Length: 334
Ligand code: GTR
Image 1 (cartoon, protein in one colour):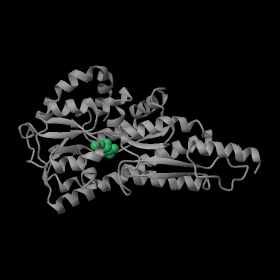
Image 2 (spheres, helix red, strand yellow; image 1 turned 90 degrees about the vertical axis):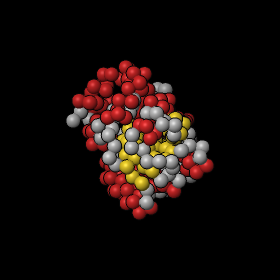
Image 3 (spheres, protein in one colour; image 1 turned 120 degrees about the horizontal axis):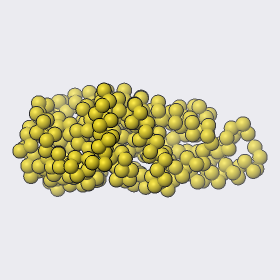
Image 4 (cartoon, protein in one colour; image 1 turned 180 degrees about the horizontal axis):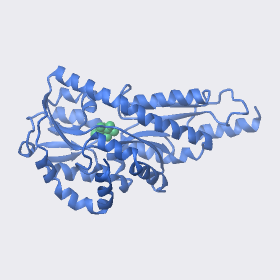
């Protein structure tokens, strides 16, 4: 290997946080890179597992030149921090909820609107079709974001849970303090439903429920179980008020340091991760439900959702106009 290549490789490696140079043949591209990836969920969670698998494929396809180092369980902070770190290139891969991306990329906020999707299958059809591709391209093209969008992931439906009482109707929600993801749209949604929406980081939810700072939160089944929220919230109601997809993004600053071939490889594996995660997702939902039954969570399944849909009309009045066209297109996807 020529000295020039070593210097070039070393500099690029430093820039992406690589741990050093391996033995590279001249035919290989110049750099060995360890791509840092973050997720708020623990190892084994569908989103984490699919990125870990993506890393193994990348490793094999590049003979160890490109690898992924996963930092799960909020080791690098929450989702807001992940976006900021990816924007400056301190982190290469971030798996984040569209809930956290909405405040950065207004176009995707349409997916954060309450009851915008009929169910998870409808959401998948939208993501897999032209709207999904269009929004990924918008995120990547938007100079402000500093992100390259690699793909979508499933996160099921979000449901309200709390430590006080079973929620069957809107009246049951009255006065309960419910933690929401930090996005004004979600606070307005909870307030419109009659609860008191409280914005808070994912890492604080367990202790906030334990100490009574909030009475409850809302999330999908696997998160409720993976974060041990069932230990402090006995009542879980299948309100399905939000169906928020997730995103796999790459730092644009780091992307620019990759060869076009490596970029293509990451896009291909990103797309595959999307499909693999989906399979893992449905398994995780089933496992979580079993666990909830085993620990005695009081699960309310039969909810008349129409009053919930009607109650969020003020949220649609406030935010919906700019997404009117997109909302129509989403509704038309079968
Ligand atoms: C989970 C999601 C996380 C995070 C979390 C939250 O469902 O997978 O990315 O957004 O919800 O409520 O903060």
